[in-house]
Image (cartoon, rainbow, N blue to C red):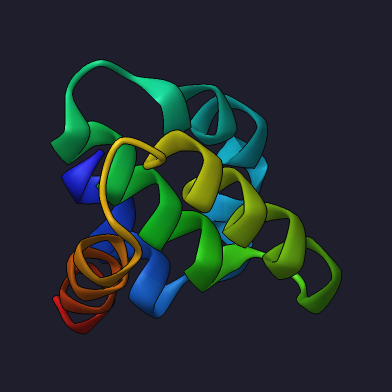
Length: 79
């Protein structure tokens, strides 16, 4: 997942072919995998899919308070 995320920075169109598989990883028990999946999807996704992905992120992190969720997500995007 980490390699795909790095490749997406340079070749987002190539990584787009993996988007369906990465979406399945959003709810992975390993939070690192889920975070890498969402950040990679945001790098490769089209404008229309970003809203849908953001809703999924907020739902999958419902156990955290809003402030904690936003901070974790913001830090993940900066990586």
